[in-house]
Length: 461
Ligand SMILES: [Ca+2]
Ligand SMILES: [Ca+2]
Ligand SMILES: [Ca+2]
Ligand SMILES: [Ca+2]
Image: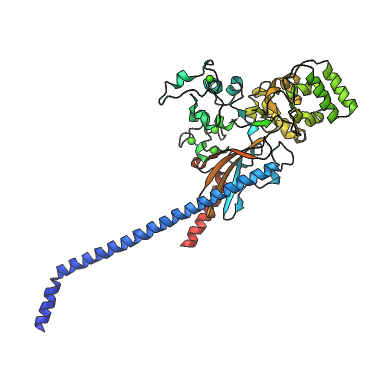
């Protein structure tokens, strides 16, 4: 017995040794548990990451579906050339399976600077970088005279430096060096290559390009971007410019529009024909008689309207049959029915003093927005004739800035599509992934998705 007892004691060592063994065993056990917990945790994060990827895929699919929906809406417009009425389509948190999408929009219906507008938008509501004059570009908020001149030099074919502008000589001194393009802008992003176009001018306070005053855009220098903390959104020029706006220069029957700028007797014959086609013989003669004395050409459809003495209703019947240019398309005309105050203010004959009156006229006379004729009421005849070569009352190019989330509000994605109807059916002529700009749906939608996530996290515990 004693021998056995003694052996047992020997095999286990003394009490302090036994304690050490216990400590080692405990450490090993602790290590194993930690390892197990670590793997369990990393599996959860892997699962979560996989779940996020699934949500992103759902969001991407919802965006493709939304783009098709936008195309369908635009090919079935009740009033061709005009954006569909807001109440006629779904724009906000539209469910597609487990995903939802939003059309991030703009417009006068914005209730507060911090609240987003959901809508399709009109590219013709913006100033076209390829057709705007230097003076028009200069009138944009935040624009510098140097950048306005450099934009003209970038797109014009010659290498003559506009005062304050830049041609290849300047670009060749940069690192890396590149040539001045000397042809038209094809995308808006190209503007970043033009000398003097920095983020402050391009984006201003609206760093996520959603037309909404987000928290970081109204906190001064606390977080990027730098802003003036005035409770209003002061965006950069990207808010107001496009390179895509154009409209067909064909009549609905496919024939070229009557070119009001052509010289010679042919113009009068064509106009007489058009008037007979649209109005009674009496009225056609009356208008033709008024135009008869006015030999020569017109610089714009609006000038024709003013000189013809026809009514705004009559003008809206012929607006799509006349233009002051030759060629298949008319580029860069600004739609006075949808342009913002800032864009209207760039027009000759308008300026910052009359642009707000144009917007308030639009709000109080929605029934008059069937053409651009109403501008005569606000600008007077000389002002309307000055603005005439740059304005239109219709649009053929629209954009759908689509944001979406997958299941449980996860996997946020955003893509902007440009849809061109110039040749009839809508064609996607440009698409740009804007997901990297971060959340663009405003505070309310974010809180809703956060609530869903919190509820789910609670349910999982
Ligand atoms: Ca040039
Ligand atoms: Ca913003
Ligand atoms: Ca800030
Ligand atoms: Ca501000």
